[in-house]
Length: 347
Ligand code: WQD
Image 1 (cartoon, rainbow, N blue to C red):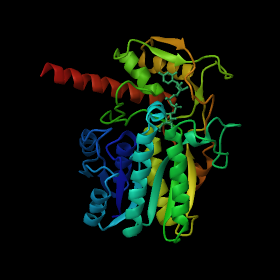
Image 2 (image 1 turned 135 degrees about the horizontal axis):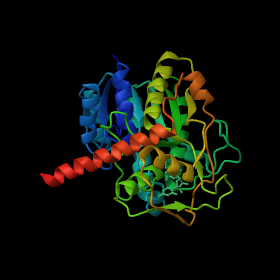
Image 3 (image 1 turned 180 degrees about the horizontal axis):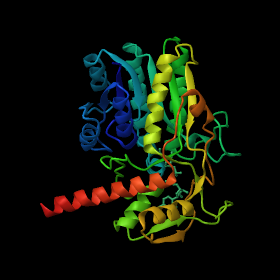
């Protein structure tokens, strides 16, 4: 049974991916310093799969501690690398923290890949590398633009580092997965996104407003050249993102002669506006959302959604969830969080 190292395994996409890997017969270990996540996710993974996984609470910026994990686990076949900071606004305010964390972490990891001869590597990238696209839907060949934030720059640099790294000796191969907008939660309601502080992303802002944690939410602009004036995105269920990672790994293992570094878009191919997302949420939750139209948010892309033919045709990716499922599972998860918080208060 191939052993896979997942970095950021206690995080939102990492935990959902571990579930998919376990359900597909892989054994998994995680490295997560829990600076942006909680070890609680490991409990959720065990409740859902019945399998325990070990998380090494290690900061990838600490090379010796990272290397020690590889020394203890000589049988790692592949790595899926999620561990990185990912808040666009925060990255603008604190660029050095983002470049240090996201790049030093990746480089330390790749030094271990080299020393311990790990053949397969899947990298968490983002549609943010496309910037404001000239035409949509975007394919993997669409031009990447100068990143709009240090966060986006770390994703672009990460891709370049992997292209150069996999060229050197031909024994390693990597896949870069460009996520569009991951949203929703595991259908079991046992794990989901746990935003740190006030949520910047749309769906957690919607669910926290609906549950009363936030008094209201702002729609960042409705004067864009789109069908209803609000920005258009390609929202994709986190469990669909997860299954694509397992398929990417299987693709690397089964296709020795495939190109050293391949890239795939992970989006549904459907563009949904902010206002459409809000109305879908209201429909599936039965909750009228308290929102106002506010000013545009600097750095926002007007409209982007994916052409996902490559992932569908070459990885065999099948998308299971639509926008209603995304909103329903996100809302169910928010209700679970409230239930747990009330239980803690009553104890
Ligand atoms: C979506 C739309 C907002 C909140 C970023 C990263 C991307 C990925 C996902 C990591 C925009 C609008 C939002 C609110 C709003 N990150 N919005 N009111 O910016 O498309 O993508 O997060 O994987 O790499 O770039 O996602 O959810 O922040 O915003 O109107 O309270 O919702 O303006 O138009 P974004 P988002």
